[in-house]
Structure formats: C-alpha cells, structure tokens
Image (tube, rainbow, N blue to C red):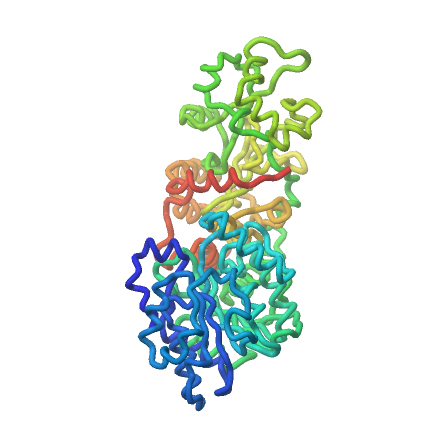
Length: 576
C-alpha cells in the first residue's frame, strides 16, 4: 500500500526512497510479528506499506488497537500525510515522527525498545550523500560504538542504527540492496549482524523489486537479537511466493559463514549447471590462476595525475621536450585491444586523452621543466599527500614497464592487453609480467582466455562491487582469476584475435566474448555449447546483480557507453 506514486521519480531518488509493494511488506510482517503484544518500528516508513502490513498482522493476531503498537520515522513530511489515511492513526499519531532517523533515539519514541523492526531503508549510495547526512549517520553510530567504512551507502547506516531500537530476542526484517553481499562495506554490515543475531536468513530476489532503483534487492530476516551466530541461510527466487516459502520454511537454503568474503556468497547463487562446469575447470591443467602465469603490481602512483600526466596538446603548450615524457595508459577504458600495437597507440594518442607521463631528468632540472614544476599547478601537486612522502617530490622510484596490462576497474569484465610498445600505466591499471618466457602468440592466447565467460565468471566471483556497481579487482583478487590457456593453432589464433580486436574497439563486448568462448572454451577445452552457455548465463546473472541491470537489459556498450563514468570511479581509487 505504498503511495509513493505521489512523489516524482527524481524526488524519490534524492531521498533514496523506493516504495515497497504491499504483498512484499505483508510477507515480511507475517514472518516477523508473532504475538498480538509485539511492538514494531519502521525507520523510514515513507508510503506506509510496512506500517499497514504490521497493523494488519497485529489485528489478525488479536490486538485491539494495533496502530498504537506501531511507530515510524521518516525525514519526508509527506510520509505522515500517507499515514493519516490509515485506520487507527488518530489514536497513535504521537508514534510517528518527521525527523532524520540518525537524530532519533529510543527515548524519542516509546522510551523502550521494539519487538520488531521492519522496513526498506534508503538506497542512496555514498556518492549521493551530503556531508551533513554522513556526519549525522556517523555520529549516531559513534554513540553506539559501531563503525562502518566511509564508502558505505545510506542503507548500511540505517541497518546498524536500527539495532539501538531493538529489544533483546527481537526480530529484524528488511529489504536491502544487493550490495549487502557484493560490496566491501556489505561485509562490515554482515559482521555486525553475525555478532548480534542468533539466526540470520537472506533471500535474494532474481527479479527487480523496484523498477526505479539502481540495484537488485535482498531480504534479511534476523531473529533472537543480542545473541551471536556464525552462519546465514541463503537462497534466491522469483516473486513474493518464493519469499514466503523461504520465510516460513527454514533450512532449505545454503549455509554460508557471515564473515566469509563475497566470493562464497556469490558461489552459493550459481545454478547447479554452472557450479559443475566451474568446479571441473578449476581442476584442469589447461586452466590456470593468473598468479601461476604472471606477477602483478599496481601501476605508477604519481600523486597527482592532473599534473604529471599530460595530453599531447598540453605537452606542446608547455613546450616540454618529448624526451621528458614516457607514454602511459591512464585508464582501464583504454584497454580496448588484445595488444597495444603501434596503430592502437596512435589511436589512443590522437583521442586527446592524457597519455604522457612527465619524468624530469636526473640531476639538476632547468628550463621549461623547472618552470612547469614551479607553476601554481606544480605547487599544488608538491603538497599532495603522496608527493610529500618522496625524497624529491617529483621523482618516481619505480617505472618498470610491464609485459601486459590488466583492468583494475571495469563495468563489463576484466581485460588483458599485451604491451609490445612497452608503455607505462598509472595505478588505475594493473601491471603484469610473465613468470617465464612467453612468446607473443602465447601472450595473445592468454589475453583471449581472459575475455571468455570462464574468466568473466571467475572475476564476478572473486571481485567486488565498487562505486556505482563497477567491478573492482584488487591485486589479491586479480591473482585468483581463472584463465583458460589451451593450445590454439596459430592461424586460428591470429584470425580470432583480429576479429576480436575489431569487436573490442567497437565496444561490442558480448560479441567479443562469444567469439573468445568459441575458440578457447569450445575448440580449445572441448566444452559443450550447453556448458559454455551455463558459464555465460552465470556471469551475466552476477553482473546484473552487481550493476542492478534487469535480465534482457544488459548494457551492450559496456565501457564504450560509460567510459567517462568508470574513469571517474577509477580516479577515486587511492592506493599508496
């Protein structure tokens, strides 16, 4: 009964408000409310679906005045107007507050803790939060001696602050975004749930619950508050009936340690056919972890890419000689081929992107380079945190040029590009060196393998969601990537590489993957079409979970369509 349609979509997104269907709210209330005396809180009651559902369940259980047992907080003044339409509201009006939840304590409401907490907290990502919102949320958690990373979305703060309102042995039933299981800060939330609930159960919707939200949804059912537990029961399904079945019949899902990393959670969601194929690949001699094939390090940390990395036009305007620059890749979106050939490098340079790293000469610096270092932008770079830690602020200690590049942040899937031009890269990209002697054809075969559904699925499992759903591979995660490396006949390899490079250059990642799957998985490893399809479908499903894209609506363009977005995400990653 959420009446959120009175709000415009833009206003609802500003508030992080995605109103819950009445049947979903009723399913959660049915599970959570068990006696007619219990009290209920919704910390962001919005369009009142949970308020109405809780009142209805209490009435069914025999409560004479159910609305008096239900309370709500919402920062949106219109929420109380929705609540006024509910039967029994007049006798319970003082139970409902228009306020920032993080300024509220139990004393502001009933003065005692609640039996049940229901709700659907705001989904706003940390990029969309104001400084005041973050400050209020973090101050509330500080008072309760709890902590979350600064990158946490709004919903995470709501979950943790809600615990201050829950009575011992109480129950919590919330709808949350899939970031609970795909993000780094989601693990912090799971750790807190583990420490305070005896039973935690998580249901993952395979369908989009909110048409306007940018994320898939999960339901958390937690009971016996103020007791600890190690494991959660996890399942997934389509629709409210599947949710009801899960809620009312425990013990049918997979058991996962709440403290485990996201890879175990994502493995539990894989269909059985994909699980079988992946398990077989993990034992094959022609499938290697990247760590077996290569060493990997982050790119050069400049401390100020804006100052040290120039476009060809900027270098020309500064009148700095070409001998003071090193050709440099500055973004994963520039990894658009299997090999950085001379033609590919010319295309990158002519695109106007930053591609020249300033490396001042050894010894005394004079002339235009000295003038550039002493410019206002140079003075700002000199004060940057990483630059202040250097013995000489503008001298880099490590400029080794890699054999290949691997994407660090990507939307679609990881990509590996050979580096015959021996250019450098900033820390927006990983550097790769082969462990043994690897001829060009062998390197090309590895790059082709990275494009397959096998490696794509592996990346979705070991990687993490970051900033708007980007796929982030830290060094330890990248080392765990599974890469199929069968022997591919030279002519077939060169022909496939040529066609795949063309598709990659056009941003046609699906077509490139399909061709790589055919050459590497079907022909090279002998997988059946059904087995390849199982891997491909599983990769796409986890990618949708990460990005919040509905089935059939996957963005074909990948980085070609959203390169600027993911460049900004990559630029926000600070690694020393």
